[in-house]
Length: 189
Image 1 (cartoon, helix red, strand yellow):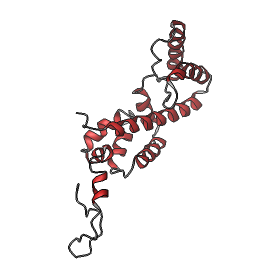
Image 2 (tube, one colour):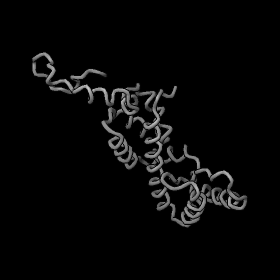
Image 3 (cartoon, one colour):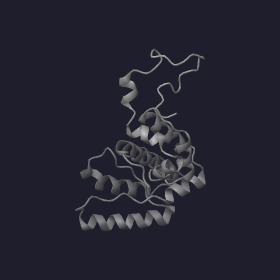
Image 4 (cartoon, rainbow, N blue to C red):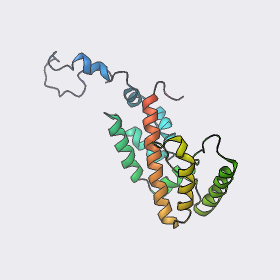
């Protein structure tokens, strides 16, 4: 029961006592946290939010069903595990929902032309959007990283590239989850 300080305390047949209740600091420390609010959302609302992190319905349903998550690290570990367990159709669904990374505003026109041409070749060759997680990299490096990555990955065999794309999809899902939980205030409706 949400908000019950004795939830999770083994039943001993005796009435709860102050000794078994959580201290006020611990009880209130997560009560309004974004992770707690996410954990308490109805399954449908949680799944909708999770689909914005990874476009696989199976992944989102699995993540929602395994709530509550005690920490962000536990949530991210579960996201990794669910990502590794995606079957072929689930991965296809997630990749179909992706869009390539946006290049920084003010990119030189020649870079934008090269990017558009490489994206077209990539999508034609592999049948899905180019996935690349740039979180953790300074924005000034995004253009060079994206162009280098797509040109390298265009030379991959299809099976190898599918594996690389799945790894990037997992990284993207982790980054999106961290942002989602870090900013969770109201459920998406």
